[in-house]
Length: 466
Image (cartoon, rainbow, N blue to C red; front, side, top):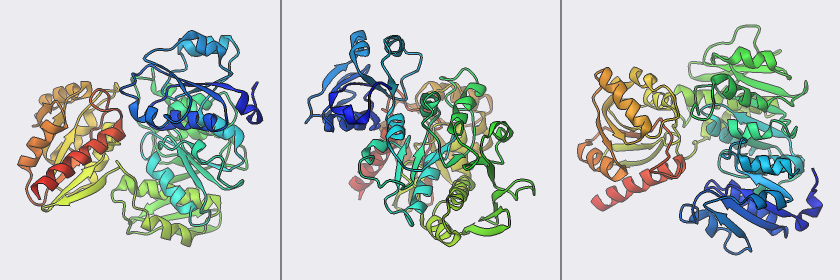
């Protein structure tokens, strides 16, 4: 490091990748408010980035959009990169060759904060799990923080959170890859929800993907703890490399040699040393085994952080979940509408379908991430109707469904066309589930934009009819 926080006002900072999830904006605002000179560069156009640019309109920012300029990567004092920018970028290589440090909003936060960290990663369920942990922590630590991949940059609260107050970070594999060589992530509690094939358009193998996930615990010590899913086929790979004591969570009773938590009759129990406690009630707002597992792992994390079981039970029984995760956002004329846009792999769509009772009208499809869609075949029978939205992933789904005699409508070019059909087909008692099981590139900016537009479209149509 050739720069320190007390010298921020003297820095020339390059934000590489403004994005639309808030991380690039918050990084820019952090430095701008402290008097630094900021350049923002992004390969996207001004039109695409307009919502983020608007948030910076009151500050003297230099924008380089639709391109990168090599000189910016040489003249900057520090570069803050978006996790979506590949580490193999030629521009980052230029920065490295000129000894310009490359950071992220997360590495910057971790360098500067004095807060214990609970870190959560996994293929699916990490947002719900991190949010549930934060919800429970807030009962004891009302100023606790939640940030990371959940689209909240921890830089938004770095100047206000009290020293020593815990922070929950949701971390994607890309964010963990960016932190791998910085030795700044040392969580008191690390948690891996599960490992499923994902981002295979980015990674050349599952081994590479798993290696990035393992960065969550690489700098932990014997006084820290690691939480692992005992039902995951890759669990032993994580145990083998674990630098801190591992604890486990499972949908079934754990074997005697493994300490942790499990589900029994939809209740959650833990066994650690001589302690046996119930940490999860049978009745919770979140339904489905996948959500119960998220709550169970959250409860185990809270207990190992020192939260009392009665506080954990109360908090998790009242936690209502988060947007875009099997979110029942509207009931209209006895039809229930669910936004599950955060389902970006088919296994997430499978979990959603296993949670809902028939009849279900499923809207699915989108952009391929070089993953296998065959898990959908196991649950197609739970769908009354299936509607496909166009995309490269949808093309694979169409082939799969035709080969296996699965009936479907579409593919439709967009939400307007698909909802025209769905709204004309629905009848009382149906659940309409928007669970794409794919990425969202092309038609939408991201899965959050996709979910918001789906909800807005449905609400607009029903209000017009009402």
